[in-house]
Length: 85
Image (cartoon, rainbow, N blue to C red; front, side, top):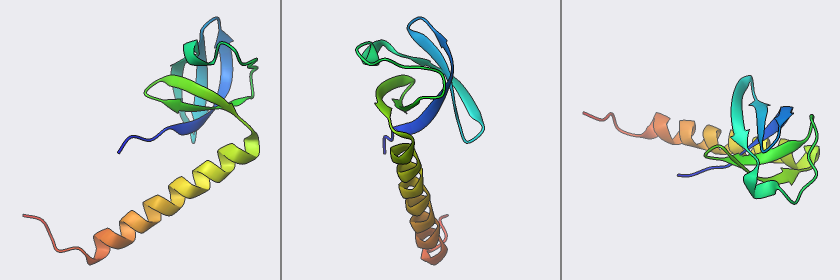
């Protein structure tokens, strides 16, 4: 499954940025969001190293809540699954 995750920009450097999410930092490419005014502290949704769009902080938090729910559902499914050889 492919998933884009919310990240918060910590440093801007032209068409690249440094962003963090849950303690993990990554360099990301801003090529796809050139038309959006971004600043340090903004949230963006990131997929395979590319920022796809700017997010409001509430939307970033809501996305993380959904991801947490999906992870919880996967863990519950794994508990009832037979062991793999």
